[in-house]
Structures are given as C-alpha cells and as structure tokens.
Length: 81
Length: 138
Image (tube, rainbow over all chains, first blue to last red; front, side, top):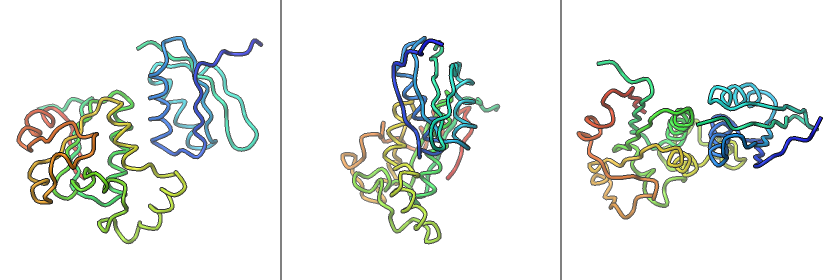
C-alpha cells in the first residue's frame, strides 16, 4: 500500500474533550479540501468521539493505525466546506 | 417563538473557574460543530474578562473543586480560560462584556482582554443575540 501524503500533523495525546475536537476542527480549517491531517489520539473517549465528530463535519478518516502505547494515528482527509 | 437550533446564547454570571471553563468548553464544542455562539459575561463573571484575572484560580472558585482545577491546569488536562476564549474567537463566536457589570467592578474598557468583541448592554443582547437562540444561563 502506498504511503499517504500528510499535509499537517496534530498530536492530541493528553488532551481531553472538548479541546481535542476543537483543536482538530481548527487544524482542519487550515487545510484545503482534499488535503490530509495526521492526528494522534489517546485510546478511550478521544477515539470514540473525535473520529465520529469529524465524520459528521463531512471529513473522512482514511486510515487508523495503533501506535506503541495507548494511542492511535489517524489520517483525516479534509472534506468540502 | 421557536428557537433556532443552530444559535446559542450563553449568559455567564459566575467567575468560579470550573463553571466558566465548563461553559466555555460547551460553547467551543457548539461553535466547532457549526453553531452560532454568542456569550455575555455579567456581574458575577466579568472579572474573567479583565486582563490578568482570566486564568487565575480566584477566590470565587468553589473550595470543593480548587484542587482538581489546579491539577487539571498543571497537567494540561483542563484548558486555560484564555485558550477557550481564543478558540471561540477563531471559530467565529462573539464575546461581550456587560457595561453594568463593568461599572460595578470598576473595570474600564481598556482593561478587557482582547477576545472581547464589544461592550454590549443586556437590552441589545436580548434583542440581537438571544432572539431565536437557545439561551444557557451559567
């Protein structure tokens, strides 16, 4: 599988609700539609709520990868406005 | 009158850290999901908009939560109020200071934090911001 191009990165380990989603939203707003954001989230509540909220905003989670420790690396494709 | 489900007005009338933080967190979550958010700080909350006082624990913060608030700020688990106000501004929300509350606390306009959009009377807030909005009083 080819490596996904990443345009911006955001590490949200240790950041709780709602700031994990708020910071994701603000970072996605820096991107153009079609660009990608690499997001690192803690397992648990962040992984349950942030990807769901991102999808509801019209963006797409294109990959999810378990990292060492209790975290996940996601790549988000920014949707249209 | 039916409320517009995409419009929220917050009346913050406390300076207790966890109440202001939770209310602004709720407002930021709403703004991040596309809601039109308007916030006014009244007599009990206006000191949070005074430069230098925004992120202080303050004697207004309830004794029962002071320890957890300190821990939360120290570990980065609880955002600073300044951080929440900054996020709200970036998300397009409006933040107002009540002029009567400012007078009662003897706070001048040039003492307000930069995130305040304007000093707005309650009458204008009621007519322009609460109109059609769901209002949350904190």
